[in-house]
Image (cartoon, rainbow, N blue to C red; front, side, top):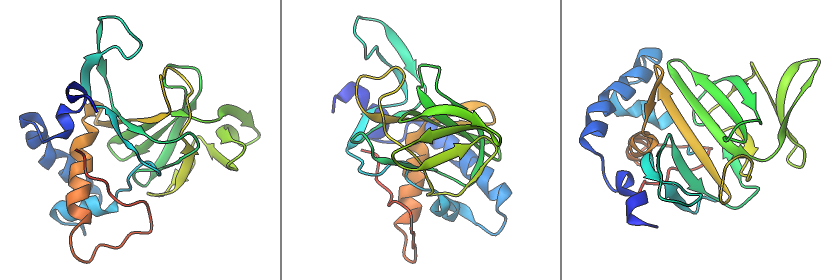
Length: 208
């Protein structure tokens, strides 16, 4: 992995350290029985067959060539084509799309949070129940307005949209502002390694 693509994954920056209490408090407000870092035990790592982090949050050189720099709004998880993608948190699907650089994608709202999953297999269609994202071979069909559970399979890794290889691009927003997903993953990894943690969903993977 190139050094300039993973600096934010090697440790928490000053910005991340200042943001950590805020993002934790956001979930505590919605879950008063949870205390402190324990709230992060409820999250699910968003991809199966994980191979590595290929592009960090923040400014980077354009992956399609040239000398331009661009802001990368999320975190990229390399995984083989067809690997299952899991919902990070309980929430509601607010949009499915297949006509942007994000490719076939799902946008989920969880309270003040928005989490977006890009470059998935499949396409968007419509039937009597409304708009949906479908991936025929997997049998998945996710509708706008549908409720999702943390750890639920919601799609598969593909190469739709603007991408140079198979991966999940994952974006997080809190109250409309972008959050570095590595900060959240670090909090989840720490909380889910504590004694007494049991999970039926995918296991946490430490950012590195």
